[in-house]
Structure formats: structure tokens, C-alpha cells
Image 1 (cartoon, rainbow, N blue to C red):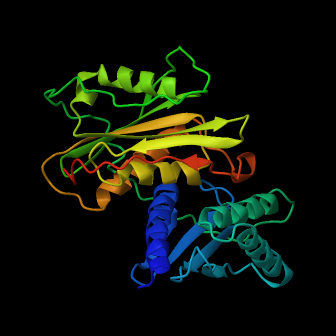
Image 2 (cartoon, rainbow, N blue to C red):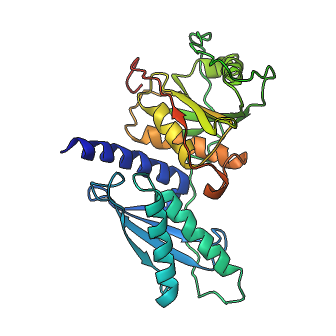
Image 3 (cartoon, helix red, strand yellow):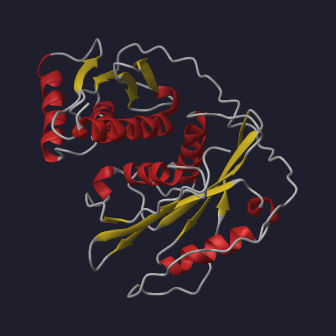
Length: 317
């Protein structure tokens, strides 16, 4: 496999994980090995009037030099309407060559459906999907753990030339997810400078339960108005590659001036790739719940400077 293909493969996997975390059961894997996926897009999830199924196949050259191969499926989508939507997707690709674009495509289709639903045109007969309850997300109890190494050194370099805000921002805690005795819980706080990131981490570690977690993975994105770039960073805390995946999710969601910490208490059973799904789901849920997410149009296209720490302290456990 060529070096470029290896890079594309990694970027595709990260994008697939992020899309699955963002869209949940709306995202469907048709053929994992062939990289074929389908996502159900509606104008309104609770009461859909217009729905399109977008099927995509990710070629090995995507995203560096080739677009996804796609198909739009909807019985009502015909003629000029289909052509206009296809043109819109191709225009998005041309404007973002070399970038991951599935999220932009899905939200563009959703915008078109919302505009269509706001017209006087009656919708087609749409059968409501059967909602599958996510029992993991309904587990509101967090397991009690005996604190170990409750105080940890916060190895954190504060960047110069960034305005310092001494006030500790409010910290919110998400609903825990438990799977095979491992428990995941996200924490979120608005931040506008690295000083606040350090303060939030210190505040969280005052909680003996959080301090005793096997991993406390975090990522943050701070928008610098003067340079119109993002100051961002992440930390695996021993869960290899988890911080980078969390930051990638935040980039796709276009969040800014926020940090997310995901605590994991390991329960003795290896979860494999599922652990990344739970970390991203925890983070995505709390970002949406606390209204940190915004539409692609409201956010800057520039992802700014990306500083990622490499942490190889531990593998999964």
C-alpha cells in the first residue's frame, strides 16, 4: 500500500468513527471492508416529512485526491431537484479538495430538506422508523471506585501571548455510559485561554472519583480572533490515540472555546475499538446537550494550528 493510501486509510477511519458518534443509528455500515456506508437524513428526526438516504463508498484515494462515490436514494427525488442536489455536493467537494467532507454533505442535504419542508408542498407518506433505545446511554449510575493516586501532576505548558482569565469556568458532567464493566463519563467547560484549561483539569482532579479514573482523556479548541486560527491540543492520558480522535470529533462538529474531558474507569474486560466509540459518544452527547455545537456555516473553515502530544504511557486498560 502506498504511503498516501496509508494516510487516507487512517483519515477515513477517524472520519467514520466521528460520523458514527455524531449520527448514531442514522449511520449504517453496509460493507466495512469495502468502505460502503449509508446515512438516513431527514428534515426533522422526531417527525420526518422529507427523507433521503445517502450511500457513500470511500475509495482509497479519498480524501487526498478523490471524492467519495455516492448515491442519493429517495422515491420523491427526481429530475431537476436531484440534479441541483448533486451539483451542490460536487461544489462542496471542489471547495474542500483534500478534506473530509461527509459531514458537510450530510448537513447540506439536511438544509435542503428543511427548506423543502418549510414550503407549502405536502410531504410524501413517510413511515416512522422504529426507535431503538440505547440502553448504555440510559445507565445514569456511575460505579463507585476506591481512589488511587488521587493527586496527579498536571504537566501542562501555558502558551505565552494569550490573554489570561483567572476565573474558573463552569464545568458540566454528562450521563455515564457503561459497557462490560468499563464506565465512561464526559465533562465539558467553556474555555478561552490555556490557563482556564489547567484550572478545569485541576478542579476535576479535586474529585477523588475522577482522579481515580484509569484514563482522563481531554481535548480543547480555543479560537484566536486576532490570528483567526485555533489554539488546540489533546491528551491521551495513556489511552493511545484517544485524544487525537476526540479532537477530530470536535473539529468536525466545528466547536470552539470549549474543552472536553472523558473519564474512563477500566473494568477488567478489553473493549477493543468500542472504547473509542464510547469516548466519542460521551463527548458528542454533552457538546450537543450544552449547545456547544454549531452549523458548518457559522464556523471558520480554518482548523488553525494543531498541537498534539504523543503519549505512549499505556495501551488499552
